[in-house]
Picture 1 (cartoon, rainbow, N blue to C red):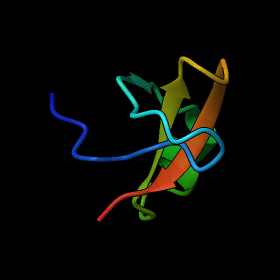
Picture 2 (tube, one colour):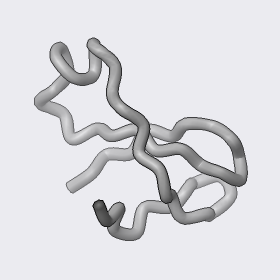
Picture 3 (cartoon, rainbow, N blue to C red):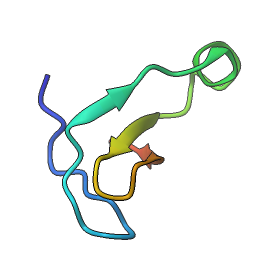
Picture 4 (spheres, rainbow, N blue to C red):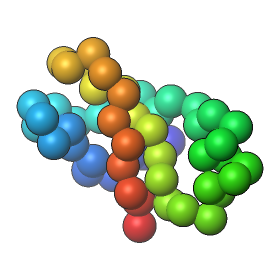
Length: 51
């Protein structure tokens, strides 16, 4: 799966891993184009609004 060109806002590293969404994001807020990506440099999860 290609992750387009989503980069971390803090360090600028390109995302390589998508984290599965939890229950709230998946079923309650599923209408939002919100995805969670893991930044390997910052070692944190980042929320990204996709197109």
